[in-house]
Image (cartoon, rainbow, N blue to C red; front, side, top):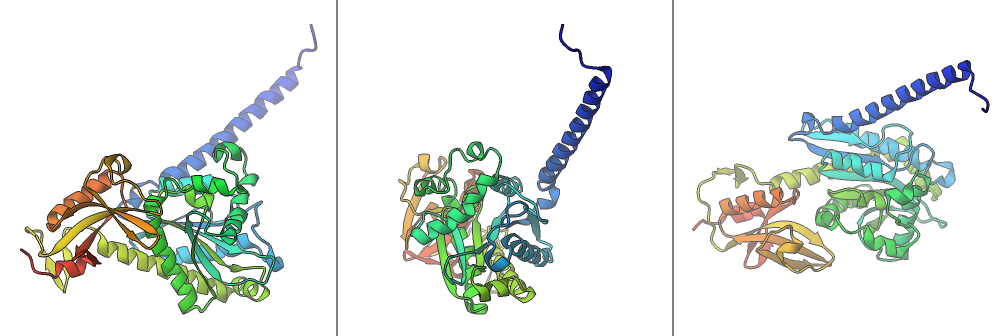
Length: 382
């Protein structure tokens, strides 16, 4: 027959099960509420910036000279967010606002759910030497061993996550070959990511006079998880005693945060000026929506930028035809359409966005040389 559980044991088990079920329900409700809230109507017509303070909770990041990367990153991110929130057109979302551990893939999901315009991840670097200086990274192949080592350190946090093999489909932070796989899906936003990174890096180097470690490419898995322009900022080296003291100070954190949020504001202003509006301001005059065909001007819609050369065929560009390509530096830039009619290019831009190229924008050429759209609109019409 065996031993039957006592009435008291059964009662305790049932009560415990109810408590666990209730707690589970609350946790699911809380997380679901958080995710759904960031997709509410308050994001409509807003420029959404997701700020990601690296590490947190059980993952302290690097501890150079006794400083904690997770704390410095969080303080800088909160300061950046506070300043951005002063702009009523900007909605700021944080992957964390407290000292807690967030899986890398969850950070990306938060940004994607919000349909963010930008994702900015903030970290501090470390090295066995007295290396110093600030750098900004975008997703890409490791250009050298140093870039690989930086990415490897940041990516290693996945080993602290539950089911990391499932969540990252076998991605190995220690394998250079794995880096190639993280590029797919993000190169569409590479051009915009590089632009934002260059604005941040320019502030670090020229306004703060920090040692310029340049804009670089590396295979950061946290950037791979996002589907929008994304950058990862390394504020400096905690392992350098002087720089560690600076980054751990209120002044240092205020300086670095200002460099980041002012760059984001400049990026937004630039994107806004390139966006397709009902009216365009040029030479202090409102250009209305009548027929607008311009002499010697070619308008195109830039839909993507990539370090790889792709055949300009519809199957590579979500069914869009009339694709052209231009190589600038190490990047191939891809354009949709070709017309001198500004109204027509606006229609083509709308088509590109409906196809999923949400960050596409109009560009102008004169005699095969790229010029600003504002400059193009100042030229005489046919």
